[in-house]
Image (tube, rainbow over all chains, first blue to last red):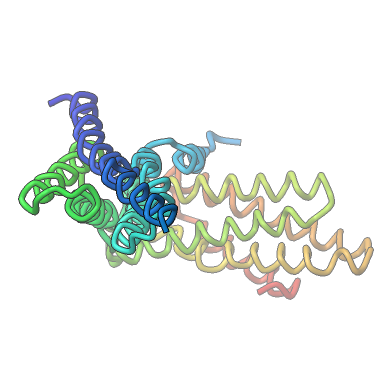
Length: 49
Length: 282
């Protein structure tokens, strides 16, 4: 396999693995709907009290 | 002056140091930085640990990879070369693979088998992009009576001495002397290049490497240290005389290596050795 093709393939594989894993870790760390629901229930409870 | 072989590897080493190859690994895990900050804001200990350690490990892998690529470059460009003692590129690939597996499993929340596939993919990607380290020694060619290892060590030591002479030269504030010392270093570099090309020359150049090169270093460093304190014309003249001698013997050595003619070199070296001793350098 020509070197340039091998490196290009390697680049794509690295992007697909390291890039994907780290971006998914970032997305997972964003506040989710459940987080908002939990936060708003805490707010409502404190307002009711 | 005959054809001086300006060592191309010095230029190539400089370019390699600033080559962008291997920088990708510094940028790919950038997403872990905001992920760490967000996890910190939300007070999730596991996420903080995974994201921060993941980022640190990727930086370590990138550093190892760059060092490994530099070592590989030196290995590829020298006729005589030792394989790197630490397989840095392989270490970088393993760190990157394990870190990717850890981030996919604990950071992104994939199952263990999927995380292992991520790790395998990262290892494959590292191999395809950068390869693993060369392990074979390239020092099989040797001069009679000397092992390849001895020759390689002597060449490395000599190259280090030349760099020290160049460093000392920077402290000397005299354009004429600077030029002469630069010329001496160029000839010395080309002698090393000759030996590298044909290690059989090592036997003839051994005395030059052992005695004259180090003598040149001593005298240059000594002059660089003392001349700012004493503006003695006599000292400068003595140094100029020594440089004349050194330039002559260096060029002669280079010439002899090119001509493969040794009949009177040893005699001349003895004469010059006596002169250097008389000057108090050796």
